[in-house]
Length: 247
Ligand code: IPE
Ligand code: IPE
Ligand code: MG
Image 1: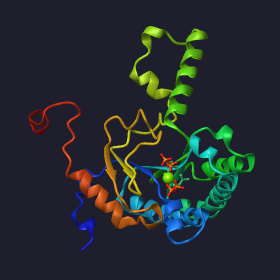
Image 2 (image 1 turned 135 degrees about the vertical axis):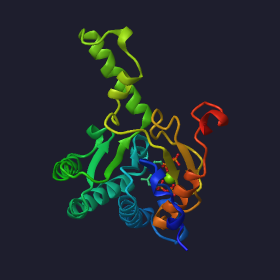
Image 3 (image 1 turned 60 degrees about the horizontal axis):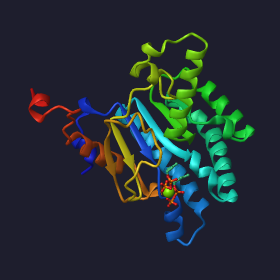
């Protein structure tokens, strides 16, 4: 029986964020090169995007490349950029067919120009879609994002367009890359690591965290359903008491 049958469709997380981890180890365990793992990771991306869209999840954020990942060996970085560009080129048509809108968050200035151009084209081509919002975190890190927000806010103050006293949480929210998206309710990390690795540090404040030993290239819809079921068994208290939440 699929876990899908037990999911309460009226209580789905609106936004799911995933740290897609374990490609390298998955490949090594098969005696293959790390890039082989990344190539197979693309299959999981396809499957999970389809699964999220079928369920009616509104936002899916996938952590594909962190600002720290630039420090990896050059052949892996180059291989990942090529894989990214080729995948986007191949997938735009299917994104449009499924009414999926692509977004990117991260430091785009770090990307090679050909990758940035390809991405911009894909963003434009899917901009009118109204179904699932697929947010790729690319050259992204939470600390980079917060630093960027602080600088931009300081600039607004300097130019006299913003009063320090008027800065509140809504102001900060507006200066994050995720200003158009609600915070994730569920964050999944694959491959048995129990850390955040600089992902959505501000936005995950009250997310439910789900960790699975499954390596990303093996992660499929059924694993996503399991994570959602687990999420639905949690009591989200937001600092209140259990009694307060239940009444
Ligand atoms: C996740 O898999 C993909 C990226 C970070 C780009 P890894 O490449 O981190 O795989 P492991 O964690 O080394 O197994
Ligand atoms: C986090 O995975 C980044 C992505 C999945 C894109 P890493 O493999 O880079 O994280 P660490 O090094 O294990 O913390
Ligand atoms: Mg990793």
